[in-house]
Structures are given as structure tokens and as C-alpha cells.
Image (cartoon, rainbow, N blue to C red):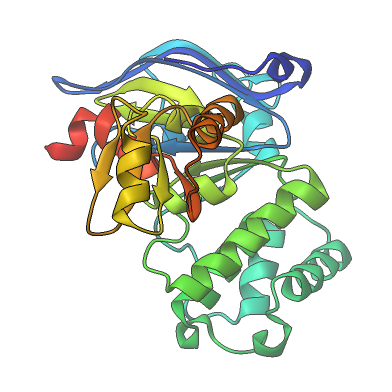
Length: 319
């Protein structure tokens, strides 16, 4: 189930995959998935544990081969031009790649050497990243003394040493406290908005995908079961409703008489009216009340969230 806005085809693709499959022994992990990710966007891949998210990242970042399928990353064929793909991407995995015995600056300089940057360019790049990630004051401290949030910032900074066009972030905020998680969100937004980087994100935090992703795909049992913007996915799930509150039971009863499928909560003096919550629907409800001479004290719009989408569309969530 894919929902594609008309404007999506106007932007060049950073990643395209067709018929991507992968098995380990007798277990099929990816079952012919298709992906198209525009440049300069955040794409989130969601799914329960074991759905195949990390396997997809490993294939797209050239860490493991696919069994079948065609993939282009940054305009390069994944199989024939693996070196060019690796030169264009950066990967931050679930587990930190930071060397605990080195300082923050030394970790960055090590990555500069691995990216074959010259001595002067490498030092300049390291200092720039220390400033960008607010690590300058701790640049000479061993990484072993860092908090979880600081380590993840340093890990992402190390990924950026080679100035990648595409970044794979495999559950980058796992284990972080809410404040550190939001700091990482700000950094990721900045990478896209200020530098035009494309971010491929896997996450277990549905709020994270809702906050960051331009487009979201739900992966379950190796298949893409739905794809679209967060709002498009939410509209796939029933449960949206308008909730009206009234001053007294007489007003509540008068309003309820005009809506066949409404549910009245007499204790809360509230009426829930199912619907798609569009502007047209809201206006129609208010017109009915106005014509009946019934006044509501308040109106709130309730829509399903990504938790509802996830639980409804992914069978694996209950395994």
C-alpha cells in the first residue's frame, strides 16, 4: 500500500531499490521490497523486531549482498559500483563505533585518515564537526568518560567526516534520554535543511519517525505493508473522530439526536462523532448544531497516531 504525492517524481532519487530479497539459511528476511527515496529528505523505515530493517540497511550500505533485486544509491549501481556507493554514504549503526581510548578530537582525526583526507583538511574538518556538535569543550577528553548522548553525537560526527551525501542511521537514539534524543533530532533536521543530506532512518520510536520523516515505510515480515507521509498513514486507520463538549445534559442529548453514529459520554458531557476530520466534515457538524440551535462548549479533533498505524498494519507487532 503506497501513497505517492504528485510532486514526489520531480526530485532526483538518492536511493532506489526494486525487488530486494535476502534469506539466511531457510529464513527469508526481505521479500522483494521496493523503495524510492528522494534526495534531501528523511526516510524512516519502521517495523517490529525481526522485520528486516537492519538487513535492509546493511544491503543498501554495501555491508552484505542481496540475494536478488536492483539497487542504485547516489546514482551508482550497488553491485557494479560498490566503491562509488561507499564514497557517497555514511553509516551510524545501532552500536557506537567510537574508540573509548581516544579523545573526541582523536576519533575524528582517525576517521579523517580513514577517509584519506590530507593533514590540514582533516584537522579543519575535525574542528568544524566539534563545533557543530557542541563538543569543543570536551574535545580532549577520552570518549570513555562521555554520556550516552555525547557518544551518539560523536558517533554521528565521525560519520560526517567524509561529507557523505546519504546517511544511514540505524536506530540512532536507542537508549538515549528524552533530552538527548531531541538534541539528535535537531542535528538530523539540520543536516537535511542546511546541507541537503538524505537520511535513511530506522527506529523503534514512532514519535521519532513522526517528528523527522518526510516519508515512512512500514516493514513487516520482510514486506513493505504501507508507505506514505505520516498523515497519509494515519488516515489509513479508522478511529478518527470529533469530540464535542457541552454545558449540560440537555445540550448533549439535543446534539446526540442529530448524529446517528455518535457516542455520548454523559459523565463527561461529551459527544464523539466518527469521521475523517476533514475541514468539510468539521464544518458540516457545526452547521448541524447551528441549525438545531445547540451550542458546544468546545470541539477537539482526534486522529489515529503512528502507534495505531503500527499495531494495525504490522502483524509482527503481536508476535
